[in-house]
Length: 229
Image (tube, rainbow, N blue to C red; front, side, top):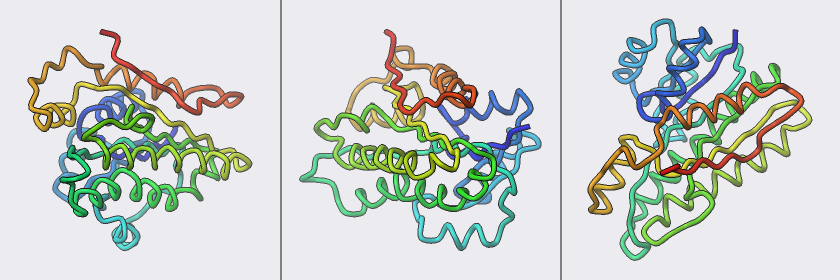
């Protein structure tokens, strides 16, 4: 039975992935930003363990984890949590830059550092759910795209560093996906939100599980998923 550490399991793509893995009987360790959110996740996924730490403050993750019991075994680490705050370069504040870089890039690097010993032991898998913005930056998306471009660099470097240890690393680049984050993006863009126009989170979950379940003789490095409509 595999053990998966998942961030962002509370909604969208993360929730879809967690539901699929939970349904097939795998062990889940669900990251939560605070104790209240951890309680909600534990109720939604009976039997799952939780791990509390604020991704917006990666400097304190080590301290937070030192007061909790980390899993001895980790077969996959799935970085799915993310934040977005649109704005032109001339308008974005350092606070907005730091928040997006911390949650979307620095915290995944720190979480990976903490779980690498377990992942090496199991020849495990690290999956970074990136974004189309991690491949192309557009006006108004500078800070978010910078964080996601950085996440691609993190994944590419990690893949080379850990190849000899048998750790697989995959980046998934979804296009616009029907989720609370997408609703927020539309609000920031001043546009009406129609979930039916965008990718169902379950479809992205299917691609993630495909990469996760691939036999050991192969590895998906980069996977782009675009809306089919």
